[in-house]
Every structure is written in structure tokens, then in C-alpha cells.
Image (tube, rainbow, N blue to C red; front, side, top):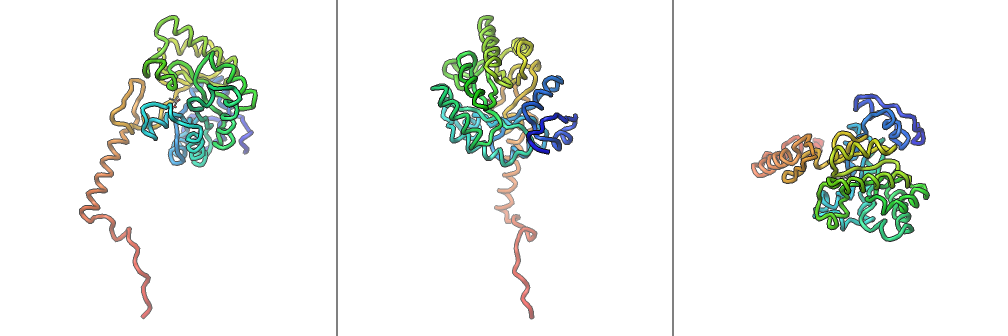
Length: 291
Ligand code: KIV
């Protein structure tokens, strides 16, 4: 089976999904038409990519959220194209079947359409991405068109757009006022008309996300946008509970990795200090000498 074979063969069990063909844009669109929710999770390295892929995730997003969760910054603004390529290559080595989308970082697509096409092309050629994601609506529609015309699939992203954190006055839910809701709906339509194959809806009221999902003919993938989208995305570190401090309202923690990690490493510290580790089973001996 080749990656160009796009016929969808999805079952219901994750293990069944994990053993099937590569996820492609046509197979994602088939899920959308069948009203089957699409699952996207962020990944930044090979080990996580393999784990998420084995779990049956449809799309791995190499998000510029890596600026916050991997690099420890307060926002995503300092992330570079080279950073994204580095992490995208790691993810590509670990992934087996999931569709891989890589974020275009701040200032990699806003300056000129030519630079945008060049940077998007680098994410595909060097980062081994299947598609790129960029933030914004009507203001970036012409740029999306240019990238799509260069043969590079684009996923849009409207609503709360983290690269505009300062313009928004912080990471705040968008589209609560009727005029803002209309603008976000218009943004979504502009992104679709520009040729995007899917659209992230972030940090908007559930009813607005439902309205947008009905208004456009491409899959919407929500984060903090309620259940009425065509799919959902979470940051893997949030999903697994790797941050103790940060628990946004829209995140469901499916594990408590941070706490469990602290407990496991404490046990290791205790064993080392008490000389309980390494044991004989972890220790290499010398070959027996003949007598
Ligand atoms: O960078 C990211 O992780 C994202 C998701 C939150 C959608 O853009």
C-alpha cells in the first residue's frame, strides 16, 4: 500500500485504525463527510509521535505551542522556522501513519506571500510535513491562496490566534460580541475560499463554532470551541496532565503524568541514595576465565 492510496478504511477501534493506511487529506475529508470526528494532537518529538500514532490519532500537529511547552517561553512569538523544521523532522521519524501538519511560526508568512511560499515549502521539503497551518482570516486569505497554488496544503486557524496575543490583550476567548462573531465567521469563509483543506477554531463560544462548522464545507477542528466541530485538537502535554499549574477550562486531563513522573523519579533518587540501584540484574560481569 502506498501513501498515494487514499481510500479510507477506518474501523472504530484505535488498534484497528492504527494498523491501516496512511491518513491523507482525501481520507480526512472522507471522515468529515461520514460525520466521523477527526482527532488531532500536538507532537514535538519522535517518541511522542510514535505513541500518538499507535493510539490512532488522525493528525499530528507540530504546533508552535512548542515555544511554550518545550522551550519554556511565555508565548509562541520567538519560535523560528528552523525550530519548526527541527521538531517536524523528529516527529516525521516517529510517526507511521498519521497526517502531519506543521505550524508556520510568527513572521514566517506575514511579511510577503513570496516569503510565505518559501517558508511553507521548507516545512514540507525539510520538515517532511504533509501540510502547514497558519493563523488568521481575511487578512491572510491571499497568502493562503498563494501557498495552496504552490501545491502546499494549508490548514487555517481562526478565533483565538495565539500569535496575536498582544493585539488580543492576552489569551482570551474571542467572538463573544455579535460583531466579533460575524468577523470570525467571515474569516472562516475567507480561509475556506482561499483553498484551505481544514480549519482550526480556537477559543470561541460553542454556538459560534457550530455556526461556522455549518457554514463551511471543510472540516473544523476545535480547541476550546465546544463539541460542535468536525474534530478536536489538544496539546499532548495538556491531555496527559504534564503541567501541574496550567489547567485551562477547555482541557480534559486524561492522565496525571506530572505527578506520576515526580513520584517515579523520587523513587529513583531514593534507590540511588540507598544503593538499591543498580541491582545485580543491571550489572555487567566479567567473562569467566578458563582454568
Ligand atoms: O500550536 C498549537 O499547538 C496549536 C493548537 C493549539 C491548535 O496551534
